[in-house]
Length: 310
Image (cartoon, rainbow, N blue to C red):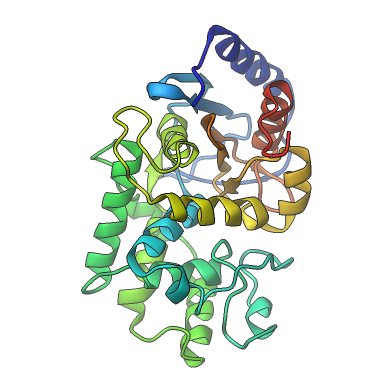
């Protein structure tokens, strides 16, 4: 893992100030109890060796993880049931369809989602986490997120969970259950997924989770192993190939870091063996990815050659 030196701190400030000169006139994510929007909000944090942190902009602003949570849930499901059991119910291939598409379930093997980073795949992945019921399953998942972020108070936004439009996710759930991909109740299998997307954190906490992945599953401060090394390999591979929705290929060429985005405007990005990054920028492009986040990460990747093939 790399140390966060003065040059990185200065460059973060520079790219954030430059990004604030843009007008982010795009589709907007909403978050917070009042659903507030701020299209000029930009925040970023990096974490490197021994927990060194650099941050700039609105890095302390809390936001829901949304689809960023899918990468973390995948890690816990792999730890619980193993790759063979998980990938018997979820594919590993890019879909080329929007993340919430039901059409992708009708292609290939009926009812099997193409990968864990789209909504249908994430619903199945969350459902495979061990737990007596939905409450126990979510509490285990939340505790896992708390350990990764080193924040024992981390929780989901209840107002946001209640307000979120859940009809399409319910349709995906019922379709997969009708094909026996899922067996069980909505309360036990779907609700934990809906809650996980409303878990809130900030860029600094997100960068710590990214640093755990960059550090092969070990806490960058204590050295404690939090995720198995083989699990990290699988998660980073799927983040690289499918983590940025149907923009994953272009992002792999232009940025080159295993990453996962969410429609809150959050992005978790990993430079394996080097550092972890958390970004927020609620203005979204047509793929559902943060406009500001993409520019910031491309600038960082080019400046420090962070892409995995650089």
